[in-house]
Length: 64
Image (tube, rainbow, N blue to C red; front, side):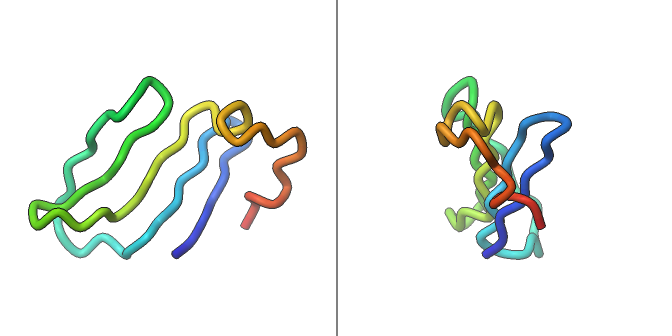
C-alpha cells in the first residue's frame, strides 16, 4: 500500500495493489474515484480535493 499526494492538483492516491490487469475507474462522488479490476479487486482510491476531504491543513504527511 502506498499513499501519494500531488499538491499541484490537490489529488491523493491510495494504491492498494500494483496494477497487473486493466482496471475500471468508478466515480463514487465528485471527489472520490475507485480503480477496480473485473474480479472485484480494488487497486486504488483517488481523492480529488484531498486537503478538503481529509481536513488536513498541512498535508506534508502525504508527500513521498
